[in-house]
Image: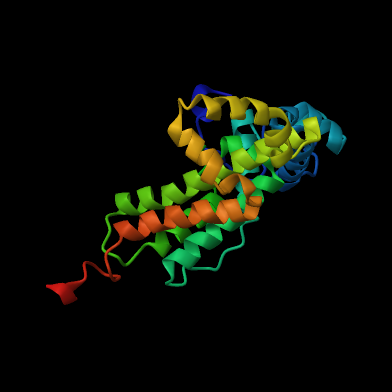
Length: 253
């Protein structure tokens, strides 16, 4: 394969890429390969989803699969776009931007928790059909306010960044619980508690002390904590939007 061929986007390549070589092409599909790859990654992590391992699961040789997925980066892009296909959205935004962005956020969180390997790669620009579908829906939710496309992209990105960060944190605690047998509250009380008390008693960090004395986030369920943070992100977006769709509120002029 030439250097020029290697740079061709997977989305521009036909489903089954004919390559020179002896033997009949096996009857596989790109979707089958990606489905097996996602299943392996869900169980063992993204590094386990190699073409050799996928081929073993499918009962074939790795080289035969390269006819469908030429390189590792292509496989990752296909996997990411496949799981984004699980985000069930209406065909177009409803007109209630807050409800629409909340819907994307909650369903994206669900995908992240179902496929933990996906979160670390969430900001990788795949430009696959499912990625573009979600992108268009999010920006469509902010359309009609007279915003520049860059503003719409930035505001929708705030939601995506929040979801990715929140899900990474949630997955981290789930992994920690599996390894230690302690959930977040138990770990804070039994392991961190004595040290935290010493820090509080030192009086050196007054804002941290307030967090310990007054904070409620650590006592919330993961669902409630996610909603709490998302509400603040959406409030920030609301502050950046004109008072009414279509442009500034002219009633005050």
